[in-house]
Amino acid sequence: MVRKKGLRKDEKGAIGIEILIVFIAIVLVAAVSAAVLIQTVGFLQQKALATGRQTTQEVSSGIKVAKALGHVDQPRNANGKVDLMAIYVEVNSGGQDIDLNATKITLYDGSKTVTFTQNTAAFTDGKSGISNTFDTTQKAWANLSTSTDFGIIVLQDEDGSITSGDYPVINSGDKVILTINVTAAFGGWSPRTSISGEVRPEFGAPGIIEFTTPPAYTENVVELQ
Image 1 (tube, rainbow, N blue to C red):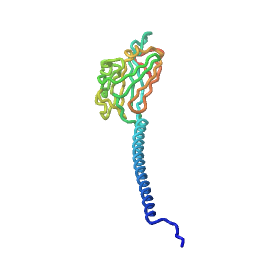
Image 2 (image 1 turned 90 degrees about the vertical axis):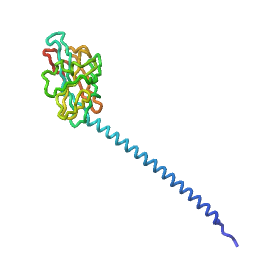
Image 3 (image 1 turned 180 degrees about the vertical axis):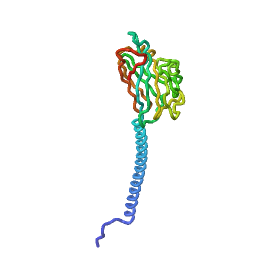
Image 4 (image 1 turned 90 degrees about the horizontal axis):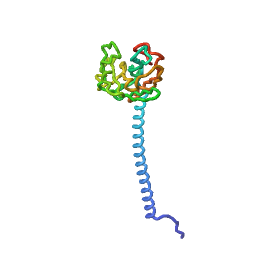
């Protein structure tokens, strides 16, 4: 009688245990992989949200240069120069709050570049009205202690967000003048001088400054931009 070939019971049991061990190992590897994947997805999601918020802040925020005026020291004189500059700025429509303490102004006159930062002492609350923008007795002008300072004159601030020079935050509806001593920074600007630059907030789009001074100075105050 021929015996049929096959596995003994103990051999079948050994193979079953091996298969079970392999199955458990696969399950453990899958569990670890799933945990790593979930962690990675969570991290990427948080990074995407943070990037999205930052991008939204950058796109929606910004400062606008409404106009720029210059004061001439000697009008109707061949040696007359622009000695002071007043930059009228406001927040872009729908833009977020802008901290003027963290804002910088950069100007280039063809031969020299100067970057200005805010001097907290050079602050004038002119919401009740000012008779002369270029009245140099105002703190916004008188307290410009270095050639790279800019000051602030408040024109409109309905919600009181600009409490002082220490915390000058402008938001929608606010209007301020940024003051610069051109003589201290550049030695004054003669007629036909090309000026370029920007008012750059901490977040958002900068306000662009681009103009050429008039061919002749016939008044004490000239419109630059």
